[in-house]
Amino acid sequence: MRTLNKQIKTRPGIRAALLFRGKVLVLQARRAARESKRTNVWRHAVGRTLLDKPVIAESRTPIWTPHEAAENALVAGKIHNLRLAIRRLNGIEVPAHAVFSFWKQVGRTNRLKGYVVGRELREGCLIPSIGGGICQLSNALYDAASQAGFEIVERHAHTQVVPGSLAEIGRDATVFWNYVDLRFRSVPAFRIEAELTVDSLVVRFRGEPACQTVHHRGTNDTGVSQRRSNQPSSEIEDCHTCNQQECFRKKVHASERAPGRTAYLVDEYWPELDRYIGASKRLSDLLCIPLDGKQLRRPNYAWTTVGFADIKQSRLLTLSRSRQSRKLAAQGADRQKALLAAHEKLARRYASLMPYDVAHVVVMQTLLPFLWRSGDLGGRTFDVLMTTLPLAVLHDRLDAAHRLHPESRTLGDFRADGSLVEAEREALQHARKIITPHSEIAALYPEKCVLVDWTIPVAKRRINRSDGSASSGVDARLVFPAATLGRKGVYELREAIKGLNIELTIVGPVVEDPEFWDGWRVRRVAADDDWLASATAVVLPAFIEPKPRRLLAAIAQGIPVIASGACGLGNMSGNLRGVTTVAAGDVVSLRAAIEKVLAQANPCRPNSASESRRDRSLFRARVLPSQP
Image (cartoon, rainbow, N blue to C red; front, side, top):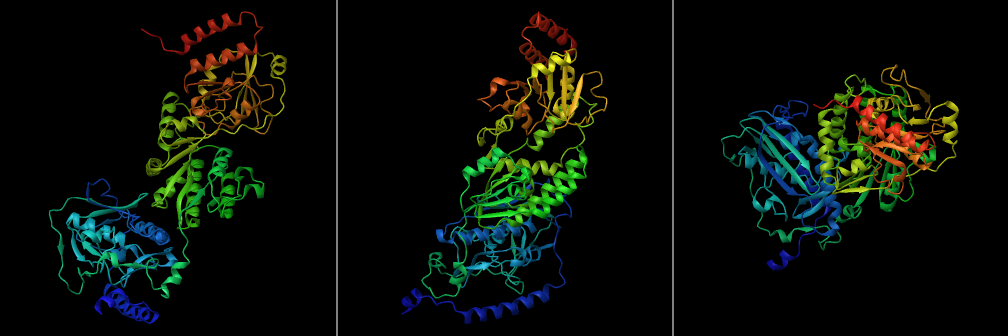
């Protein structure tokens, strides 16, 4: 008879649930009254004095523990709940002798705070519950506190052992708002760091090592309990393996979606990346865009929206950003700060739109460091749509250019905050793939980069360039397709064309010294003019050029292009006949490339080859430092 009763488990009912709820309310009220005067909650902004201290304890546990495949939705909910809870923990510093309380720090887990249904162990069953799964975080905190030798003020063991959890080695600590808590203290101050990697929850403590041993208070009114049922873990039921089909909890669980979707988070339109997304998306995936550019005739947001289960827009935020950007200067530190702030707002908006069942994210680089720093990529795999150099490399490149041209007004005007640079570096290190059409960026990540082809625009009919140059009395017309900025290589270009009988067309404003081009034959045109008309060649010896659209337009029309490797055209294998690559900052190579184009454009000019060699020798003697 006992065996039969053991095999036939009591079916949970609504009456028992209501009785349990009543008991919980009494216990919660009692604890709330007892703890009403305690305010041991630490904010992230208070103190960073322990940031450089050594790690004194670390707990690392897998987030995808053994379970039935049908339970994936609840496990995904658990990971989302962990993602929210660790935001209240990561980076806090607890003073010496202060008592850390799990619930005081994390707060109540409910829907209003974004918590979703996860797995919770109750009455011998793994059941669906709002905020379920955060016991993995309390387990990790207890494990780390035990390793560090902290005094354990309050800890309650689970009544049963969940396979794959720290309960298997006795390092678990269950929590239930608010009367089942985890509390501990340390003699020296300590810092808590918590994060979710792709497959693990990591909790570490930093501080000064303490010469102390683990101490548990007795089983008293603070409730240090280490009781555990002798029921084997194999008898723990969940809502998919349980035979109680009439249990009211089944109905709650049946509404949960299975995880596995991909979210694409994009900003400014790139045709190359749009083509990649179109080839890799699935019908169940989510697309987050600033607004529907095709519908609203905004080509800078013209992403393809067909073939997604959900499309989320941020119209008001995008329109506000557009109005603010029109008030900013075309260049300068203020503009860069405003752009970073706008990217952060968009990243936060996308994070709020991304449901918990998203297991993989494809995110644009401008949003990446903010999503990484906020923890929204934790517990998920992700790929990066790379559109420019990493901030750390970008800063090094600008610093090198500034050392060459300290007189520049633009090369040293802005650098991003160091914490943002570090966040991007860490995120790129953990990214699964890097997707980009830019060959220089791709070379930084040879093992995980997906190099996509540049999109060549449709060629437009243009004026014969020989007619234009002959009528103006010059040997050739070169086009510089950018504003006069130090990072675009204008100092090198000005030096390289000195003494040549050419006319230089500039597309964009003169941002450096207003008299920068005095003494050179220069013609300025607007970007919407036909700036390629009568062009002999297009020259861009940039230190930094993330988006060489104007060079691609020249390639489409068969115009020779002289560009630095920073322009990222190394993968233009089918069009390289018209592209000459020079090193950024190398004036001699740039001069030689320009002279070669002039010789090809004027093949009938007498003695052009000998004059070119003589001019190059004189130029080298003038530009290069003398050798001893």
